[in-house]
Length: 415
Image 1 (cartoon, rainbow, N blue to C red):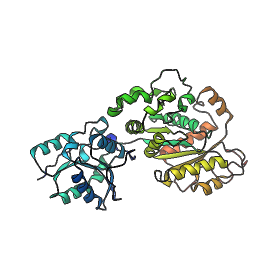
Image 2: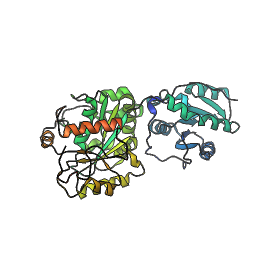
Image 3: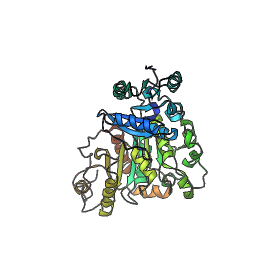
Image 4: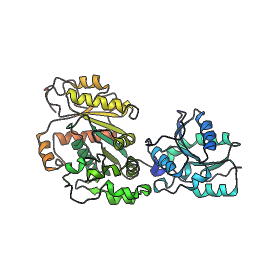
């Protein structure tokens, strides 16, 4: 016995991120259709997971035996389909999962009228009896990926910016990338993940006692976070972008957990064209949450061995989370140096995508907590070009960006 019910697509919840908690069982399979499993009974859960995990068409990306964990898996992992028991299907009441029904499938060991009712109320796409209809379940799941891809909502580009070492210029780059993409007419939001130092606030000239709303104001509503909550918490900059600021009080930083940022960035990406993440120098749990969400990982480095060592260490630490083609190495302030762009590629294993020239006006702007004028040359022009490449992905991964060559930083003629 089976009843199929049409629902809606995953919408807001489609993001490729890892959960901070380990699944209750080892995950199996490296197929093309990503599956999440949410079944309360541990024995039943293991049976279903073993069956799906043996099928090469599927990759199990998350598993849950309780409602809270299930919400995290669905909102953070963005599976193509979710296989749920009736009990956990009933518990899906989270704002970030609105419209998720079309990719939900319910399995039940005993098919009853209440089970069908629960599936209908959850908006499930289909209901299957276990184990009698497990082959039909597999066929249904194999078709979910194509349907999710065609029905999925547009998601903004998430760009994470990290410094190879302190002083490399990641904060200035991140704030100007946000301004540059907003200047192109793209709906842009800047998220400061440096919860301990809140450097973005300083770079934007916001005094610590200004009393503005920050990520800390979202802590009380973390379990029911909605777009409306985020809208109320955003700071509006005069250059046209919004910003989710880090807490002004460093002692409050532990209250802002990685899960809050995962949910916030998921919702922001659904409502913006570009999300720029400013990462702290230390790759703590909050920073790792940002890395997991990023489509582009920008590492800002200067042409010195200390900086290159830091960049290499960062890339090694994040090797499992960031594929090689997702790295964007940016050379900042390449003044005279014996180190060339070719050396950078040999050390890091990837070519530099862009070069940002030294500009004396940057120091003055930093001292005042200001951004460079919208149409400024030098640094400003280079950042606008970088923003275009990051958003449009105009430069193939195998080619260096214009202006990056063997003479970069060796005293050759600057652009």
